[in-house]
Length: 251
Ligand SMILES: Nc1ncnc2c1ncn2[C@@H]1O[C@H](COP(=O)(O)OP(=O)(O)OP(=O)(O)O)[C@@H](O)[C@H]1O
Image (tube, rainbow, N blue to C red; front, side, top):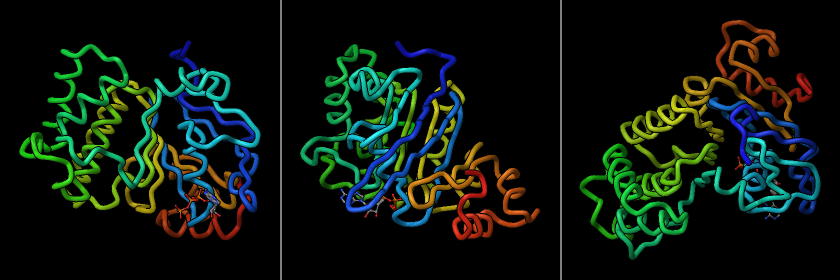
């Protein structure tokens, strides 16, 4: 059973090797009710980590707990708590956004009336009202991304995992998505997202983790990271480049 007091995500010693280690004995904790950004250079292991949390890739070793639920021992229970949105949304082209949400709600066995109300609210909140009854195949990339997000949120997940969620969104759409995520955090959900847009991490995330070569090399609030990088008043971009260049500062 999930517990309110457990961290939203607790990763210990997580390891995955393809032809070489992609995730290397990673420890990571995201407290409940937090907005957490995961940064790292290309190939650092961010997506592989999140795919393991979402149950899409089997780890070679280590443990993953979602809200206190052991995700490797009880993957079905963990998946009920998690939403996963990748930067390449998988939605059904022949369905309209409303039909898609109805379909996803059915997969979760949600109460149909509540799901319908939730679907309309998400569609409205994400500014998809005009597209609600158009087939997804005719929607732009940004609109499709919003539909995928709505689909991920319909079952009220406790941990929302987003891999580059703002890719392809214009400024207005990105603002709407950010607001929806922050609302979810205010109501007790937790968000962990990867982003290459450092300004997004800087503005939205309460905590930032920096991954390089499959390991957490630094973690903290922006101010704490500034302290680690040893230079007050520098931008997150400067700190990031410094930390990635000199891994191990917080290991
Ligand atoms: N299915 C796979 N098969 C083989 N190697 C893989 C696979 N998935 C990831 N990798 C490798 O694992 C390493 C980590 O990749 P990953 O996609 O997790 O990095 P990332 O931090 O998300 O990078 P990016 O910022 O570029 O998305 C890379 O060396 C990548 O080539």
